[in-house]
Structures are given as structure tokens and as C-alpha cells.
Image (cartoon, rainbow, N blue to C red; front, side, top):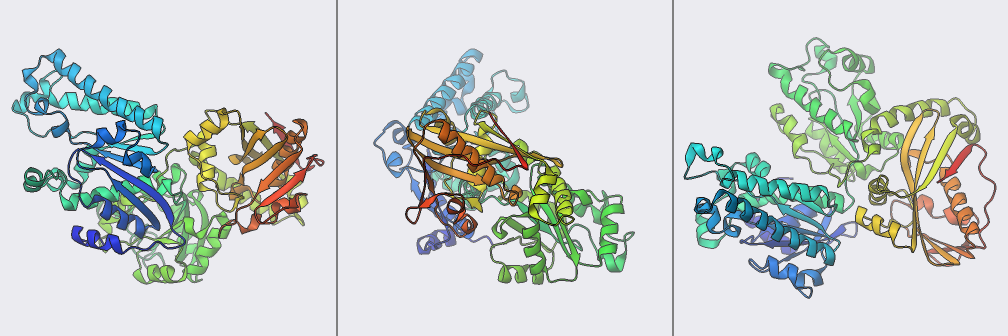
Amino acid sequence: MAELKFSEYINKSPTLVKKPSMKDVKVAFLSNFTITGLAETFKVLCYEHGIFIDCYTAPYNQYQQEILNKSSQLYKFNPDIIFILLDGEQLFSDFYYFPYRMSEEQRKQFIENQFKEIKNLISILKENTNAKIVINSFLVPHYSSRGIIENKQKNGIRSSIQALNSMLESLSHKNLQLFVFDTSIFCSKIGYENLVDKRLYYYADMKIAPKALVKLANEYLAYIIPLASMTKKCIVLDLDNTIWGGIIGEDGIANIKLGPEKDGKPYFGFQKRLLELHERGIILAINSRNNYKEAIDAIKNHKYMVLKEEHFASIKINWEDKATNIREIAKEVNIGLESMVYIDDDVRNREMIKELIPEVFVVEMPNDYAMYPEVIENLKMFNTFNITSEDLNRGKMYLSQKKREQLKSKVQDLNSFIKMLGIEIDISKANNFTIPRIAQLTQRTNQFNLTTNRYSEEDIKKLASDGNHLVYGVNVKDKFGDNGLTGTFIINKKFKEKWVIDTFLLSCRVLGRDIEKAMLNELISMAHKEGVKELIGKYFPTQKNMQTAKFYAENGFKHLDENTFLCENPSPTENIDAISVILN
């Protein structure tokens, strides 16, 4: 997606029409300086990623009034996310230019008071909205009249603003709703001279230059993608001229470009960036038209290969067309095509995948391979609001999955396979440790998810403690390893004798082993013990959860209407012999 001119984003924004498949997100911008054009630019960028945003930009420098007034347009708009952009030069007034008119202690107190004011505004926002809150850190001034001795000043202007930024970061550590956008990192990325247009700043109070506003909007995408539950799960990689330089079938293992020096360095760095993503839970797969023996030999034996065979959940090295291979990879790792990202140096292959599998996000690769590591750094679609233990262990889990598939190929029927796995299910009430993962499952599970209700961590915390709901996490393990927390169900028990199943889902990673039946049977058993007369199941169809359409009917529920199923006087059946269930 080529970057447009600032004016082109503004002109294009009003012409956008929502497509049926697009996710909706409501975005609010609050600022103490002019940000004209940011909302329009952001709307176009989100649209290009399949997200339709509705924007509210507060009037100029009215951020405090908007937050303090419970009847303000901000709260009427009811945003999903709020971006707060504050300019320290304007906020700190004389302190920004004349800090040394104050004593050392007065400077310290001034910054603490600024933090208290910001903290109070954030607390009020939290009381009145469930929106994610993103506030920028403050730029440390690049100029000081004290010159080279500025950094020696205790509670000087630079150290004071750094202290304020540290306070904001500490506040965000304790607050699930709050995120701090690091302005210094953004500035180091694009350059201070590109951030500020002094002419526009002094004449129009436009602190951020138009070109930099486009860059900023692109950085803000990192927050919208997980909010819209559109985080990608898998990177599918070509080999030749992608993860190494050259063609393995022609150049041979000794002559491909890969290593810490000269021509091999960009590929070496590219692989390191990919390994970083793998270690935080992103699935890697290979899709290469090559002779298997030569390519796998390079992967196993080239001394500078950062990515090893065990890092790939699926390896397709053959002479099939690449679209067929991608579909096979999706089946093998059991994820939807919309969760995949494809990286290939060959523009013809990229265009083919765009045409044949539009659900897959195809990365545009630069002609200069020295830029390859930067490609990974600029991708926003792997962001999440939390990284769970399941994410960190996903690589090991897929290695275990390969062993399960090998076992499955050796047995005659599904029941024998399930028995040989020795499955154990631990069903436990949500706690502080499991809540992040339960929220993540509601946001990211699409296939076996009967209602697709999306919940944040804050939502799950409230449901688990409000007295009207039961929230359970389901941990699955077998003889090959621990799959982690892969399922959840949420019950609305507001009426004692009538329970409604608000959420019932299971990760695609453990489907096909009757685990969902064991979960439902345990839920029915719980309802029976509590004297429940009616257990209501809901099913809301989407393009991705059609496999669950008959789940309740096939497990003894009456079909009342299009979306509702009833289990009267719920009574559990015998547990599935091959699955051990523990309820905590």
C-alpha cells in the first residue's frame, strides 16, 4: 500500500464506504494543539486494513473540558479507543523555557503536580468509559540554554520531563486500559526535523508536520488492529532471495548469501527479526518452489541459519503452486486464511496470492534487500494488548502437535486416537493469572466460537466478579505436552433457575478430540448441581463459525429459534472415557 500525500488522505476519507466484511471501531482524538487531518488520514489507513473507523476529534485544546464534563460529546460518542496528544511546550508554559526560575525542589514539585493532573484526568476517563486510552509521552527538549551542562542539572528540564514520562509508564503498568505512546522512539524513527514544521507550528499551532501526521497515524494502527480482533497469527515465508540471498538449487549451500557480514547481513538480520516474532508466539511456515532435499539441507546445515527446522510449524517445499501450499498450511496449523501473512521477494508470486487468496495479507517487499529487516519492524498486524504464557510457548506446542498428527496417521479411528492421547482437561474459575488469556481467546477465536462475543481484560474482570456470571478457563494437556488455556465458557446466572451460555469457545488448535463435548458435559453437570431448570445456549452465525451451527442440537438441546437452544432440567451424561476432567 503506497503512502499517499497528506492532502490525498484528506480528500479520500469522505469517499470511503463501509464494506460488509469490515470491522467497526470508534476512535476519539483529544489534543492541546491542532491535529487537523489526523482523523481523515487514520480513517484511510484503517480502511486499507479492513477496518472502518468512526472518528471524533474534540474541539481545539478542549481535552480537559471533554474529560471532566460527563455530558460532553466525547462520552456521547462512546469511543472504543481514545488518543490523547499533548504538547509539553504548551502544557508546561513558562516551565518549558524558564525552569531555572524555580528552585530544584520547586521543579520537582511542578512535575509531580503535572503528573497528578494527568493521572486524575485518566481516572475520570476510566470511570466514564471502557475505552482503551493512549497518551503520548512528552518530548525531551533538544535545546537548553545551559547547553552541555544541562544533563548535570538535578531536576533540570530534560531530567524532569524524563521523570514525568517514567511516572506515566509506571501508571500504565498498573492499568490495563492505559497505554503510553513513546514519542521519543517515534521521533528517533522519523527524525525531529521531520516531526515539526516550525512555520506551521507558529502560524497554525500545528505541532506535528503533515507528513509526520501520516507517519503517526500509521503507528496508531498498532492499537486498532488488536482492538478490531484482526491480529495476524502466522507468517508464510518463501526461501530463495527471501530468507537467504540467491537460489539454493543453482548456487548451492556454500554460495547463498547469509551471515553476519557483507551481502548476507540483511538476510541474517531479517531472520533474527522473524525469530523474535516466533518467540513471542507468531507461527512461522515455509512455502517454497524448490527441491526439498537441497532446501532442507540448507535449513539444517548452513552455519548462519538463525531459523531452524523446529521453528516452522509447517514446511511446504515442493513444486506445487504457492496458493495451494498456503491453503494446505492453513489446514495443517488449523487457522483461517485471514490470520496469515505472506512474504515473498517475487512480485509475481505476491500478485498471484492477492488474486487467488485475498484473505491473506501480502507484504510488499522492497527491491533493496538491505531493507528486509525494516519490513518486519514496520508490520503492525502482530500487535496484541497482552502476551500470555500460551503465546510464549506456542512454538513448543506446534512441535507437540506434529507428534500428535504422526500418531493420528497410525491409528484406525478417532476414538482410538483420543484414548492414546491421554487427554486431561482442567476447568477452573478465572483468576488474575488466566484473565488475560481468556480475554485474548474471546478476541481471537473465530472457528469454534458460538457467539463471538469479544471481551477485553477489564470486561472479563468485571464479569468474573459481578456475582451474575461464571467465567471459566479450560486448560488442555495430553501425553505430548500442555496445550495451555485453550477454551473458555461464560455463564449468565442472573436468574437462579435459568442459565444462559454467553460464551462457549475452544481454540482451533485442540479441535477434533471431543474436548468441546467434555466441556459442555461439565457445564451441564454444574447447572444440574445448582438446581438450574433451563440452560440456554446461543448461536450467532458468522462466516467463520459455521462448524458450530449444530453443536447444541447434536448434544441434546432443543432448537427454539434461529439463535436459541434449550436444555431442560440439565442432567449430565457419562463422561467421555478417554478424557479426564478436573473441575476447580
